[in-house]
Amino acid sequence: MPDIGLPPSRAALTVLAPAERPRAGMLGALAGTVRRYRVELLWMVFAVANYCAMVAWPYWETVPFHFVWISLTLVYGFRVWPVRATMGVLATVMSLTTLSITLDAFHGSQEWGELFEVPLMAAMFLAMVWHARRRVQAQHMAERRAEDRRSLLERQERFIHDASHELRTPVTIARGHLELLSGRVDPMPELEIALDELARMDAIIERLLVLAAADQPEFVRLSEVDVEPFLEDVFMRWSELAPRAWRLGPLASGHVVADPERLRAALDALLENAVKYTPEHAAIELRARPTGAGGLAIEVHDEGSGIPEAALARIFERFARADAARTRAAGGVGLGLAIVDAIIKAHGGYCRVASTPEGSMFAIELPRFAAEPLRALAR
Ligand code: ADP
Image (cartoon, rainbow, N blue to C red):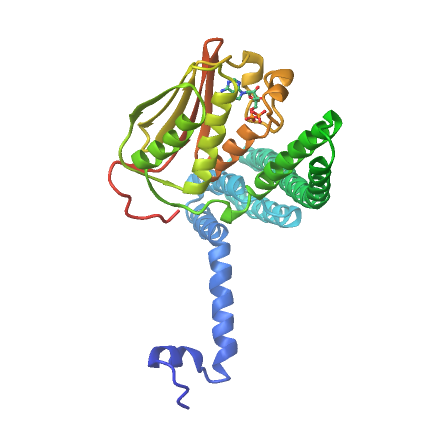
């Protein structure tokens, strides 16, 4: 055997004599076929054994006879064969069982009436065939629908991404020119409005691009986040920014598996909303507690205007607005909560909201929290 520099076991596996190669291939194919059809093969062994019993003990023939038919019906419940194969098996079982009972009826060891059992058992089997085929068809249809929906969503996301990307450059250029112009001429309300609207479009484009990226596997880069210092830092930045009655509630101590950048963006969006939709000096509280299921719930409570019940169910959808006029006045574009939701779903978590006219509570639930540093980050 030529030395090809492989370890002995590998070399022995790799260098087969030319004549042995087709044999190894055939054995592999045979093993694959046996694995694939193991249920059918087991049934065939069982059926042949029962048929032999029918022939060997003609007076007890009806017991193995029923075993053959019932086992055939059960097997078909698991495996739906093509129509031809099904009819072939049915014809074979009918002929053999009819033959055995007919011979025994001639010899007097069975009643002629037992022959009626054959079409009855065949009818039972055909009922299972009908039922199983309907089930398989329904399953195929559901799979096709899910696939269509997935590819439609994928195309929509790609379209949103491409359209947002294409819009970004002209909006940036138009903004740049208008900003130049506003520096050269006396203040003009029309110019201010145009600049405001372009800034809004810019914000929409940025957020649409984030949403379009949310399905990508690299959207979140997970690491262990030390909950207390992380939330304290987020809280400090916001409490210095807006005059509200800021409260840092109890914070669970431990580590959560999250993408710190994305988690911060989600919390920023919730706290920005809390500021936008509360009057000055109203209370806003940030807190975090472990959930029973080994997760972490981070909550933002505010004493703001609240969200009407009718709007609550769809509040995390794109362009959802509880009150369009108030939202626009507050400078919102209706994509902040959709981004929060996408970020938290990418972590395997979910968002919750509860609201009354006295205020709202937004919670994000992350699934992997431990009071101690987590050992493994593997998904
Ligand atoms: P926006 O950029 O318009 O704030 P969001 O997706 O963040 O978009 O919020 C969607 C809508 O939910 C807002 O327009 C607002 O009506 C409502 N909303 C969000 N957070 C709050 C809150 N803390 N209090 C009251 N309403 C809120």
